[in-house]
Image 1 (cartoon, rainbow, N blue to C red):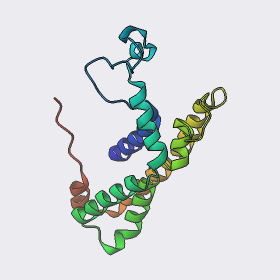
Image 2 (tube, rainbow, N blue to C red):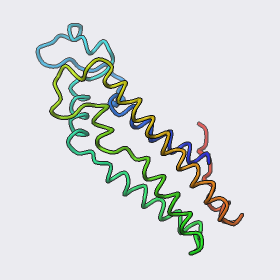
Image 3 (cartoon, helix red, strand yellow):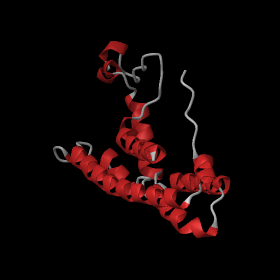
Image 4 (cartoon, helix red, strand yellow):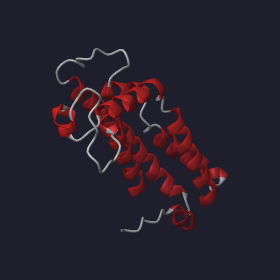
Length: 174
């Protein structure tokens, strides 16, 4: 159950933080040509606007969610083999995997948060992004409930040995 919450949390975090993604850089961002370091207002805010705009443009033009769903499905397939899912457990396993894969953000949800490629530069109407975020979170809450139900049903079908095999160890703290 903790893993499901972690994945749901990560999916939500991805959806929420994607527009804010910037490269980690110890040095202050360099001002674009034509600006002195102190004259560039964005430099004082702590992020590199041209880099961010480029990253968001790449997401706008390429993100579909398909690659994330494919990678998640691959990992789940490997986990299915490692756990040893038997034929009588497949229905519960499929319900779990489908519910988990449904948490990968769809293109429309991502674009509603970061803006479509043809969106006006002024951005959406007042509070438009916050409203899009609320709609996405509401949708994810319903999907999370479906996932919780699928996890409960799956746990009931697995043997103690399979449950132990499904345990994911904690990462070491640094």
